[in-house]
Image (cartoon, rainbow, N blue to C red; front, top):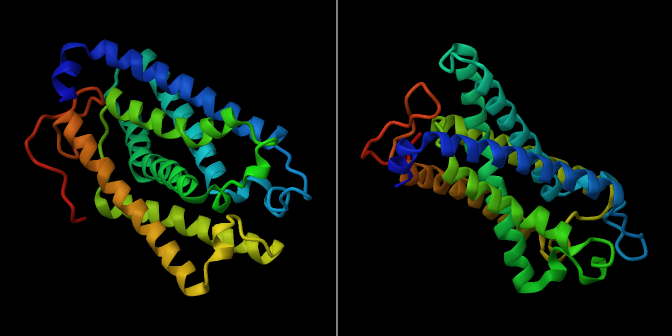
Length: 259
């Protein structure tokens, strides 16, 4: 789909991808710094925001920081390859492979999960995720930067550059470790403060809480495979491509479901 256009205008895609990484990196760093510095919800309004862990207790904030680091790293590679005549040297290939693994394993699926879950729960009952009483302290534009723009930038990332997906074993283990780390941290916050990070957990009994968390983890795994399929569909390639990061290999083989 994108492959033919890419082959005819590789320079255009390279410029678009570089600009995207630069703009997105600046966007997410601004959101992360502004949120941590200026979003201060009084205890009388909601005790969770200033409790143990501050902004770092929220998966959304983890994701904003993840996107900021990923986009900045990708931009750095763009600049490095611009001045490096040998784009096929081992160092460059390692940098690109690491970038692709981070994007495929965590950056894309976590962005999808955060955006779709947040707006899905907001549509059902916003008090479960972001109570209306917090609105005066959490700007709407910042809300969209953190919950809407993450998926917009990730879609643009998908359509402006190809990537090599890691093996399903590596990708799913990486995603699983990221999710497990956050879930452990979320329970540490509850243990330290006695407050659940998200109001929805107060409404659930322990069995349903376990089911909700299991469903959330499973949903992220589904998003991983969706990302793999979309990458294959757009770039008409299997999960490998030529050594040059800008030349995906055309194939009719779909991405495998099994590791």
